[in-house]
Amino acid sequence: MPAKKSAVKRRSTRMVKKAAAAKIPRITYATLAITPEDDKKYDEAIAAVRQELGRHFTNFVNGEPRPSSGGENPHASPVDTRVVVSYFPKGTREDTRAAIQVAHEAFGKWGAMDYRDRVKILRRAADLMIERRYAIAAWMAFEVGKNRAEALAEVNEAAELIRYYCERMEFHKGFVLPLESPGKGQKTVSVLRPYGVWAVIAPWNFPMALATGMSAGALVAGNTVVFKPSSESPVAGYEIYRAFADAGVPRGVFNLMVGPGATVGAELQENPGVDGLIFTGSKEVGMQVYHHFAKNYPKPVIAEMGGKNPAIVTASADLDEAAEGVMRAAFGFDGQKCSACSRVYVDRQVKDKFLDLLVDYTKNRVVVGDPTLKPTFMGPVINQAAVDTYLRAADEARRAGGKFLHGGAQIKTGEMQYGYFVEPAIVELDKKHHLFQEELFVPFLVVDAVDSFDEALALANDSEYGLCAGIYSRDQKEIDVFFDNIQAGVTYSNRRAGATTGAWPGVNSFGGWKGSGSTGKSALGPYYVQQFMREQSRWIVG
Ligand code: NAD
Image (cartoon, rainbow, N blue to C red):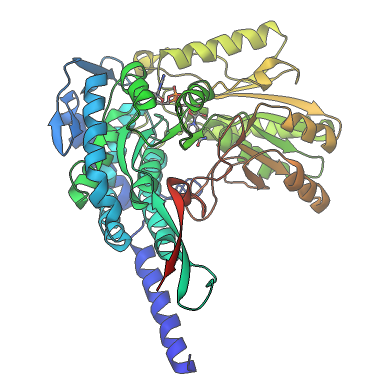
């Protein structure tokens, strides 16, 4: 390319990138950078959503509202259980069968559409989510108790996931790859093609981002979807549906089916009309889905599951950096992130200093309260079962001689008595205790001393999970050994913004090894979209 032309091309590429970046407010989990304008709009959205609480919603099949014959479920807010956030239908097996059927009928056209047209529609959905971000974040505060910065970051992540997967589709030119010609007058091509109908089963803790990401991956590849959000976060599910529908995703291509695991979840697993299934949630349910989905022949199952994510703090670590990073990862969204840091192995020589700093950061930064208020760092946990898990763990730790450095109780004072509020807990405990193994999914951090880096690494790997892991060390050799030997899909060194948390589309892929994930390919990353497609090899003569 002549120099002048290539300079023009470089400039225009830069401009396109700049324009795309300008559309996305840069609130991420790492920056949590809220502007005064964001605060104002969020507060206005909270006031508006408050007026809508208790609204009745429906499922959507073939673009039409579908009230269920199974009745409705009221969903109480974890912030104040006297408040009903929404009523959603309890989807039945029959409703789910209808959704699978229309998704099957819609597949032909959507799957055959030029990928560039699909990308155009999906990008509009991302723009709509950004336009609606304050209202969506406000609903999330009432629905799952997420604070404003984390909720706004999550809506941004949802939009960026759509855009990133679209960009991947374009980068690979729709996954049509000419191969070496077998001879004169003949050509061969590898084409990745969609499977058909995908079930998308989502968890409540990232009700926008993860559900949007899974759905967008399936859709951009040309599949149609029956989407089951968690019953703890159906409004977020509805907002995803609304964005896709308003963006122009054709009827039947994306169907919303809220309802119990025992009906909607079971039908999605058992119905032979479902060609692929993607699940994000607990290991218990994920493994059940993994074992039961494919019956007569292999079908793709992507299961992203839980974690018990360790941080290693070595003798050479910057202890202030380590303490802040661990605090943010352990107590961000109340420890209810799959990436939450829930166990720490700290070198005995620096243990006391590290723990003093960690407790200071927790005391000073982790404000517990109403998630709609600006200063709040930790809102409520999701439900009574989470409170029970927290109290059971605290009791077990006490009985095993654990030393509570912070927290350990439910908060029952003032307005918090009406919600599911607990204190952030930091417990020094024997590293052989099962609380170093079990995923609790509440703000409960266990810590113990180790005598060497090798011991810490072995303990970090001694887990059925392999999602995230972090290290704090100034010794490059230790850091290299950590990356080469840690059994985890998402890894960090010396990260103040979060020891084990903060993945972002196109920046930091997110997927688990061992009991944390089934495919070895990560969400948010460059190999994700391919999983929703199968290869067809074509030999064309003439
Ligand atoms: P969950 O397993 O209880 O539920 C996940 C989804 O599965 C929900 O929609 C639920 O209704 C559905 N479900 C329940 N029973 C079912 C059944 N029998 N058949 C089909 N579907 C069924 O998980 P959760 O409480 O919503 O989410 C928390 C868990 O998710 C934690 O373990 C967390 O670590 C994990 N998680 C993992 C990732 C990741 O990327 N690896 C991300 C977020 C959350």
